Image (cartoon, rainbow, N blue to C red; front, side, top):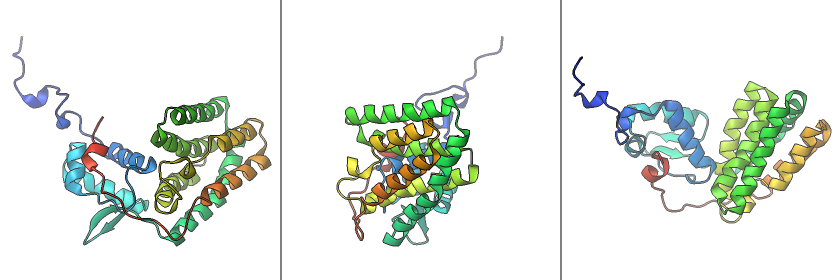
Length: 247
């Protein structure tokens, strides 16, 4: 019988980050999630060394993730400042909602045409989870679930191109609301309302396309009403290691 290996790299270790290094996709999703639930405010510096430490990888592994986020305009890369969470201008904030108004009624129309019972049940579970999170006082999770509701509609619509565009827009909406939303970023005023989502779900379930598109437009308009332009401000820099390290 061969002797047991004495090579530490061959033995799994729960405490060693190298035992299961994060993929670029996992790092990307972790940063986007922190943006979606308002833990990484606009202007936050994303120091490569700190990100690498948080993820348990080398700086070389982090850089492509930052480039991808910059391409989606969630992060800004500057030769002098490095990477920072994007801080949209007032004009960009308005453009985000203008584009959402253009594509989301179309997505909800496709959703009604193509969604099966499983997709509709997923929308209902999402709303239930959001209401439960709000009831428990977990507003950050509730905000993230609010964004996921729109992703689920796009997923059920089956339109990959519009779905990719919406993915970027939902992340940028979080940045817009943190910069220009009225009141605390974690508050109800900065998030989609469960009641509006339920009304949309009812129209989707009944295959009422015209009503669903109208409700989507009103819903997005209500979100845009939360903006106070010009606005925004800077708070204390968050601890990247604490935010992005594995739980």
